[in-house]
Length: 58
Image (tube, rainbow, N blue to C red; front, side):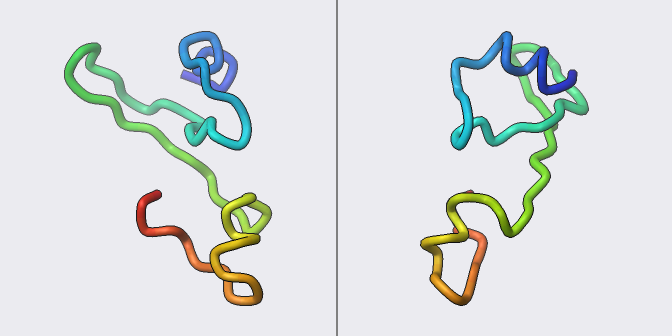
């Protein structure tokens, strides 16, 4: 499933659309997806300034 299909299914949009691609989906059971992360992600700007760290909750 590509980003266009994901956007048709989910109401979330940037910066809260944290899925780029779905690899596997067993409806009602599980999903396996990918989020490509770069230093340009908005959460790196404030976590922590000058020392970007991936927030643990993500």
